Length: 557
Ligand code: TEU
Ligand code: CA
Image (cartoon, rainbow, N blue to C red; front, side, top):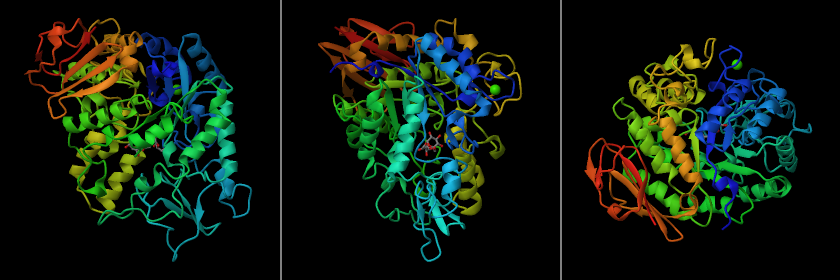
């Protein structure tokens, strides 16, 4: 299999509003990101995935787009974007945009016209249905709480919004909608953008008849995700997208696919599928949900290592030679990796951050580093509701605590603290000056108070910092086809302390061993016969001994 450039690449995700403010308004912007490109280059990343920067009312921090071909004014101008893209290319960095086309903002012109009547040119750009017995057309709940339907008196109909009411779902059955999407994709690709991360792209094909969804006993609504994800026409739409747009450019595409299985993923990323290059699947980040289905992801139970190993190993094995994985621990929707999967206490934070990075980056797939992960940034450990700003967290609190009394306030605050998206959205830690050098103004969102001890300035020139460990890990991947293309062999699936696996390629073998506990253990996988230890998070190597959160990678030639 000839290696594609995106198989060898490492992607760095930038959440622009929290990355670098350049004009003192407290909001990160494109000019600020442009100033920080040398930092991303120094890390060794090849590609930047930029969360949405399009014009938006910002009800969901840019995932509600009102104009796909203009820049949100807080981020700057189209000239600022052109300068950013040009600077990135000059520094050997590619740039992926975030394609959010399952839905638009309700402020988008298309929706403003569509809602006026049933016979305007945009009437069928969205999913409108008549009331059924005076009520919503089915029992679907929004993923941001409440019903997935909102009534529009002008049409005497409901419109579907899987997310917030300000995010009406586009009607992908309408060929005119698909043409509009192909055109806006070409607009950005013709500017030289290197590809797209596609927001919830596996939700765009809804099931025929929009049937009721499974409803947990006592839940106010049905959970549509199992019957909406990977819908009947998804492959057709993705193949049409490829024929119409993607195949005409040398681009990288990654589809965000909540609910997809390895089998689904192979149909989208199959090496001759002509659909997408890779997917973000959600299995490992969806582990240890609340046993009460009405609470979904809101829980505070750590992920079991055996379940984490089973999930990641199944994806590695299933896609090997058939498709391509994306590799991630966190993003702007997930809590910080070192807090969720490692140990963010002062004694073990750095060690476990390096261990997690090694465990993931030595696998087959394209690794994604979320801004600040390379520093070992942690969750904020919020304690009060007024510390949150994310509508998913706030809506969930009000629905589950105030409206439905399914959970009490202290318990829900514990759940939010553990898994709220806001943990990932606090501004980047550049140095120990006021507001961590993120802004000279009042930051849009409070910083994590631990920025004086966890910041880039402290780490750039410190050889054993988390930053420089990530830099060495990325350089190692760039140097090795065994790491990029090797097959995967899981070791000790029942082991609930150590995550070990092997990679094999053209007669060479890699052995990766990671201790996920704060205990010292011993494991012998024949490392004594290895030709060398390629990387590890302790200065020395004590053979079969694995110290707390110790990770090490051996090469067998
Ligand atoms: O996320 C979709 C998604 O599945 C997550 O929102 C998920 O529901 C939860 O937040 C994490 O378990 C995408 C974007 O990444 C997210 O930021 C947007 O809010 C959402 O779609 C709507 O566009
Ligand atoms: Ca700014």
